[in-house]
Image (tube, rainbow, N blue to C red; front, top):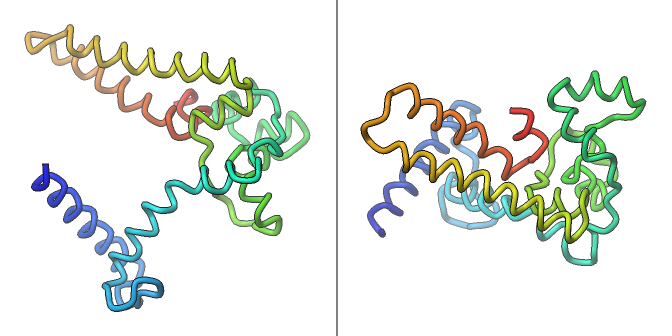
Length: 186
């Protein structure tokens, strides 16, 4: 287990260092972790940033201030394109993603695209409430579990087509966990 963790951490640091070099940031100095290479600080901040949706939305009931537009519009927006959907409905669909609204709560002047993702739990809570959110979350869990069980049932004697098809479904389904509308569109 420690060997696997070490290999994964080493690979992540090497990949991040390569990315920093490609962007001309290899000589940047650590600001928060004094004396460490910048790549370690950058990786630490990236891991910490993965929790942004929770520490920005749950304290102070910020999640309850999020304005919910139609879940159907949110799901259809990535399918037909957010620019086209925005022109159809008359408002910018990107401003009504859960992560963007949470970010605008804390920094209303943030104009750069991006921000925290909504993840399936916050998305389902905002759009479907507590009970509907539980149903939506269970549906995602059952769907992903069914794909895993299907891959196990196929076994090693399966055709390359069926194995490839299940692997494709699995990989295309994972974005549902991070940003459900985008994952469903994919």
